[in-house]
Length: 446
Image (cartoon, one colour):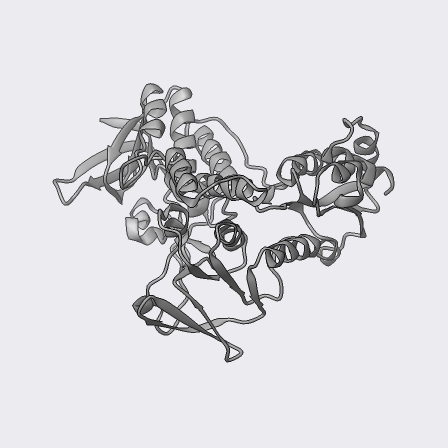
């Protein structure tokens, strides 16, 4: 049987590509070796945001136990009263759309040919006009003395644990690290964050880093910034991490959250389809997500930005092009969000990054707490910052920290994508008192 699309990997990009391919009239087969829905639905975005919401309710005085938070998280990932999540809620919509789902490990054996094995059984060979590779990424684990022997968690174990650790060391102060730090410290766990940069969220705006660091410190998280973990030792239930300044930190559990890397596509034999890969096994897609004759890639496997919303978008771009509809990806305005309290959000460039690109840019900022919306929210902190191209009078960057930051950033996203003049943004009526209005008022004074 020949297919229009063979999609390898059923995470966010694979779901999107399969669904749209079928909607466009294609005969589609999706190959997945684990859970359809991937990391986001079961081990990352959804469980972490569920736990953050529970921790937030506890932080403002609700009687909210870890057991309740864990049960609510389990409901969100379809793991109630079972040990491993069910992906039925992801499978059914695809099946209803006409997507055939094949369980097993895929290997490309030629152009348009994929061999699938399940639990060592007889291989099944699929043939199709186009392949879409959506194999995702995996945690980056640094080479470190004693790490493997001591044992560690990645985001999977951190977001899915049913047992609350008494103490925790987190390696990495990026989005995963800070979100997990806030979850666990709010449930009474002693938490230490180790980050080799001199601030948390090093890719975000420095003001956002400062606001979040202050909040986490107030809540009891110990910060060890500007140092690296060099060695791990385990004695009984305690893991001791030696840092580059000679000091040590201890925890009952250790989370490694220093980033993720695309899966090596040589492992699935992608060269057999005539695709060129770099020394990491990562392809170089064009703006149609094409990497070879009849071969496309999407999501983390493409080697670019690692966000679920990017994976979904690229999956749809790949499916359109594979089905013969010319469509080019536009990644000029990609939002980045962290769902801590306060939330942080960003799009585009900081003023320094803009200047490095030769843009005559300047920055305007507003403290969130001293705005009308800020006054109405007890204990609110944060900022709203805009970076403006002086010559073109358009936005080149937007940043926020505070309540609703993950929502208001999308006005900046649209402004960057469409190159909307700052004057037009400032002249747009925004409801009072909203965080979005803070953004508009900021631009009116630019």
